[in-house]
Image (cartoon, rainbow, N blue to C red; front, top):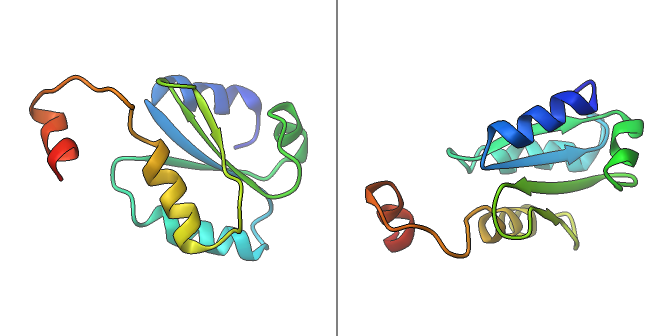
Length: 110
């Protein structure tokens, strides 16, 4: 993402969007790319610009999940490993309370 307007559009266009903040040359970015493959219904983006990261309060490498429900934002904290990042996204990408319908039945009982 090149600017904060694009990031804001992604936040409003999607119920949840995972953002990686950091350079493409980092080990964390390589791991991030692998983690994103495990999710079909979640949108992901990459912000490499430190100015945009600073606007959102992210220093260095970080992952933020922006969402249109619950608290609106979750920041990943912890050791940057495949299982911990994946669990963070799984735990925070669904609403705590959701309407029961055909679309959500699989999520609820799955």
